[in-house]
Amino acid sequence: MAAVTPIHAIDGCLAGTIGERGLTLDELGRWTERLVPRFERLKAEARDRSLPHIRILYETADIAAARAAYDRLTKGARTLVVFGTGGSSLGGQALAQLGGWFIPGDDRTGKENRPRLRFYDNLDALSLVKGMEIMDLPKTRFLVISKSGATPETLAQTLTVMERLRAHGMGDDIPRLFLGISEPEKPGVANPLRRLFGSLGIPVLDHEADIGGRFSVFTNVGLLPSFARGLNVEALRAGGRAAVEAIETAKHPAEFAPALGAALAVAFAKERGVRAMVMMPYADRLLRFSHWYVQLWAESLGKNDTEGTTPVASLGPVDQHSQLQLYLGGSPHHLTTIVRLAGYPEEDTPPIPADLAHLAGLPWLARRTVGDVVTAEAKTIGDAFVANRRPVRIIELPHLDEWALGWLMMHFVLETILAADLLGVDPFDQPAVETAKRLARDYLGRMAGRETSDAHSPASATAHQPDRGG
Image 1 (cartoon, rainbow, N blue to C red):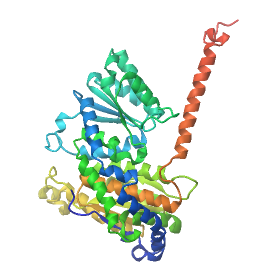
Image 2: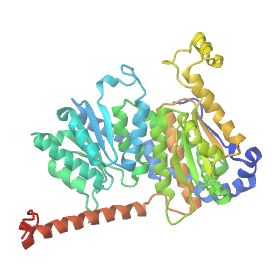
Image 3: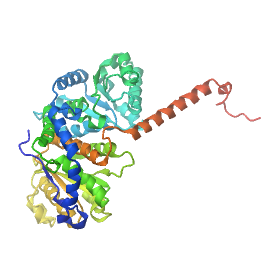
């Protein structure tokens, strides 16, 4: 467990630091004060664990069940393919990217004995076809995740791969090659994934019914990809609990980092017209975290025609050479969050030779490491924002491991829930997304209806005959 609490610094957002583009203490104070009722309810929810998103952090039995299912699924496997989209995939990807950093043979991971992990989260015909062509089918396993069990993209991928297995004479192997995660069946509500897997004898783990996909990273949706990367899931949840339990000693929302972050974001939107929330971590292992954050913020808060904010995924240092010009010199409508580490690992980056550095005319790089360069850029980027009078907040993690990532992800889960209260929206529904899903299903249904009609039409026998003239 981390010995040092992460730092959440907002000085770069205040008028006393960046002038009139920053918030005054009075403005920020008004918005934090508005959070008092929701803050008190959240404190009670943390105390009695009545909020499912908090309760899951204290569960243990589900870890053993998920581990047993994972072990059965991956026995003899070289590759684990994950079918799922949005929240069914992004959290797992963020966790897997953390685990992917460890080298083969590391005692913490035993990586050489684990299957390769592949996420097919975006439905694309060419990607799926080419992916199937290179799959070693007898050595490949499939984890299919859909909370509702009715996600058309995920079902299309699953059915297509099943047909390929049947075409290769492996139809009887399907029950041991697949594992599903979906919520329990509800009376009167169809769950196609449950129906399909039940008919074929494929095991299905229960998705937490009261935790939506974009919030599900601490559930078995995140656990199984974590196992594939040898992560300590108990430490992940411990980090999440630390983010929650900080509320116990906070007497006001301004003393609780997620509440302060929520007030900051909404105050900038309402008081300064800042409409873009840029997430910019300085670590490759946090790239997918930034994409997870984008979905969490966008899908939870973008509703009811509310004037909220648009989240943007970025990455340092690379985006200092692309997006940064916009953030520092463009329209002042961005609030940037820098996530950095107190120190960067240097085990595999030997010092830069002094003679070569001097030969290149770069004496300041002599005997420095790649980690030193990243540290310098991550430590000074905030100063660049301040110099250009652009709002910036800094989150500094003591190190990057399961505990720290758990803390970071739970911080933003809570920040999102609290921001929703200030915006007057329900953070847990997604009505516009459901509309898009329904329209797609209706379109496919009309296609099927036309094909059936054409098949029974008297003209169907000659409709596709070549034109012979007359």
